[in-house]
Image (cartoon, rainbow, N blue to C red; front, side):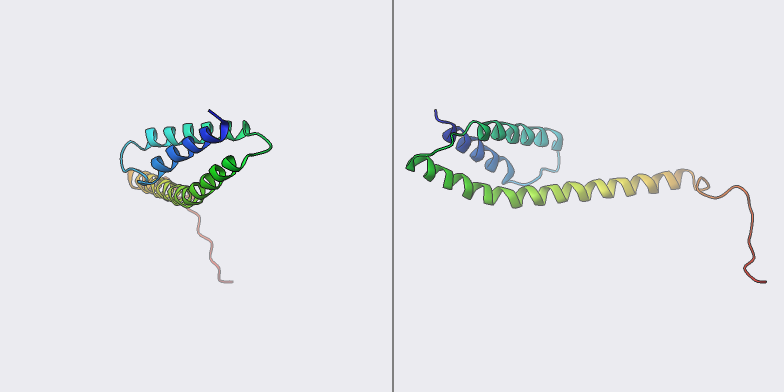
Length: 116
């Protein structure tokens, strides 16, 4: 099978994987599979020939159209993951402050009067 056909199949698999959106559970396995598909696609892209026939150019246009629909989905999922991580970090800080509320206070007890 030519490299362009392999690339098309991998791109279709990637599109089918990304289209439903980011799952609420089993995110780790979802992200692992996503990374596998992206790595396979990169390997297939590195094996592409330098010149293409008319059929290969047609398949390449199909790959480009699929990729144009994949990119926004991946960007949206990346932003959602980044947002979730930010929320988790804030929750962690708040939980630590709740568990030990006096941890961040200065221990010297000094007061500086601003009046002269």
